[in-house]
Length: 355
Image 1 (tube, helix red, strand yellow):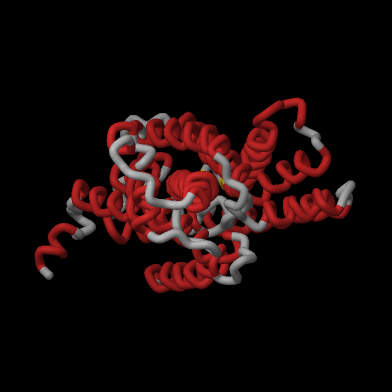
Image 2: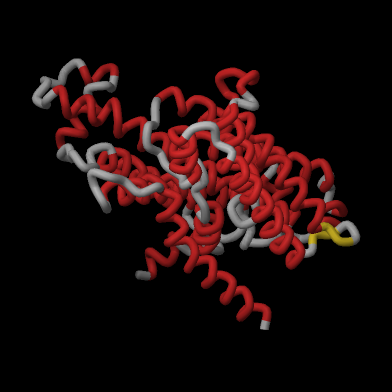
C-alpha cells in the first residue's frame, strides 16, 4: 500500500509510471472496444486482425478469421475508437485550457456555452449550407466560428474592472448558452427537409456513429498542435492561476496569453464538435480527476487529461452502442447523465471548501 501511495502521491507523482499505465490501458481499450458492439468480435480475433496491419509482423500471420470480422473491426470499429480517443483527449485538454483561462475548475466548453455556440453555427451550415463556400472543412470552420464568438462574449461579459468575476462568468455562460440554444431551435424549426433535421438532431446529441478515417485528420492535427503550444506554455498556465497581476509581475504577457488560450479553446472545441456533435461534461470531469491524481501542475495535467479523456469517451461510446443494441444512444446523452451528478458534487465540494 505504501509503495502505491509513493507512486500516486499527487504532490510528487511518478509520471513515467502513470503515463505507462494509462498508455497500456489505452492500448487495451483500443483492442477491446474495436471488437465490442451489436456484432461482437472476440478479443483474440481482434488482436490478430489489428496485428495483421503491422508492417513486419502482419506478413507472418495466417488468416484464420472471416472477412466479415475484418470488415467490422477495420472498417467500422477501429476508426470509431480512434476518433473517440481524439475527441475525448481534445475535450479534456480544452477543459484544462478554459479552466486555466478563467481560473475556475468548474469551467468547460459545455457549461460556458461554447458547445452551444459551435452547435448553432454548425447546424446553420448543415441545414442551409451557409458555409458551403468554405469547402471540405466548412462544418469544422463554422463550428470554430461559433465557439470563438461565444467564448469571446462570455470572457468579455465576465470581466469586471479588468478581472474575471466567477459568478458573472457562470451566469454569462448560462445566458449565452440559452441564447445560442434558442438560435439553434429557430434554425431547426426553419429546416427545409425532415431528413436534414433528423441528421442534425442526432449529430447535436453527440455521436461517433459513421466515423471514417478521413474524419481523424483535422481533429488529430489540431490536437497535436494545441498540445505542443500548451506544453511549451505550461508555466504561463500555472501562473495564470495566481491572478493577472501576479502572473504579469512574474514575466507573463497576460493579455497575449489569454487571447491565445481563447483561440486554442475555440479551435479545439469547434473542430471536435464538428466531428462528434455536442458531448458535454468531459472537459469538466476529466481535468478535475486528473488534478486529484497528479496535482495542479499543467505540465502533468495536460498529458494525463488527454489520456483519461480518450479512454473515457471510448468506453462511454461502447456503452452507448450496446445498451439498446442494435440501436444506439447518442454519446452526449450518457455523458450528461454521468456528468450532471458529478458537477453538482463539485459545486457542493467547492462551497464546503470556502466555508
